[in-house]
Image 1 (cartoon, rainbow, N blue to C red):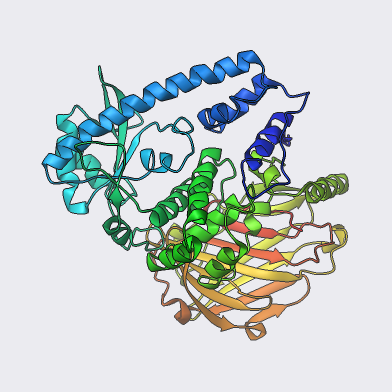
Image 2: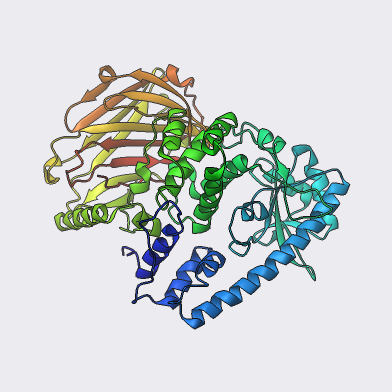
Length: 541
């Protein structure tokens, strides 16, 4: 079933939009039909209960019982913050004795940018230290009663550090005693191989500044420019999964962190110009661009338009179509998919989906194993497991077949649409882009992907899914288009890879059909397999 945006969710979004000082057109009064009990549940789900509590403490239309709920919550937040501050003081004191000044990545660092200290609470500490200090930090934490564990499973420190040293933080250190229950995530600058897009965390660490509010102890935080960059990194880590799969259930607290710090940047002299320069200096342009575009969906004035244009010019032409995609497998719409569409656009989509249902054009996924031919011996290990083929059901006779093969010189891909006459309004397999993913888990992926219509290109992609290089390799001369069948031939030499018998690679192949925006028709037909998971068909406008 589709998830409708409830009145309580709409009211929460309106309330958040009203805090933007640049938007004079937004005035907020609660709807008379609002269910405050359900509203509190929505606020709690989004992790911003303290923020909304402070925001509404002087709202007359808030019922007394709701006001009391917020008051009680604020007392809990105040007590928790006091305990967290005391614990951080204890940990930092012992680290200082060993010559280590920890950098607090969020928590109290972000809290400095909120107008009220009760507006944000942290459940744990995130401490950045030097890579060479990790084992000393481990020794100090263990002496304070902390132990490394993950999901309740304890780990010996040496083993835990070894298995998590290339992640953005080590396995959590947990502690519970009369001092309270705490969790510390120890971060270290990532190596270039495992870093998010090669962000220079060492440079960010070098420019850290003292964290205010602590006496007789040395604790640091990122400077204001780097603090916004880290807020964008933190946002991205929670918003991105493998293979460009963008999560829409992002906690609203992540949006608020970016908004509050960005608001502070706006007050600085030449703040945004300095921010763009700093983002480029530490190689964080793409993450900042991605995050600010997302946050602007709630607060359009979070940064000037020229900032987005400037960041875009320093990376690649950026359009976020993924924010508008629908998962047709179950026709589910998540909370943020509603947020990302204007009401009139959303209404058009509902009408289109209703029309597709009436025509019986409902997309589903069926499993299919396809052997890949490497050489004359046809190595059986190249059987793909978990392969999927997208078909158009009702009538099931019309479906897209994807086949592929290769020899020593070329990769070959072919798409064939069977019985196209059964699909209303389709004039041919008019393709917009072709994508072939070939990757070797977990080190790298290779993507054959066109930059423009009727072009085929190659992208060498890091594990996190962002392009680090692109090569044009051909045009129509390598593509046969027979209206209902499309064949592609790609030379291997441009991939700097020669297929070898016994090699193990993941694989994905897609064709994206092009339609004019006004055409209410299915515009993505795809096939995927291997460890890459399944790309579902989407409707776009």
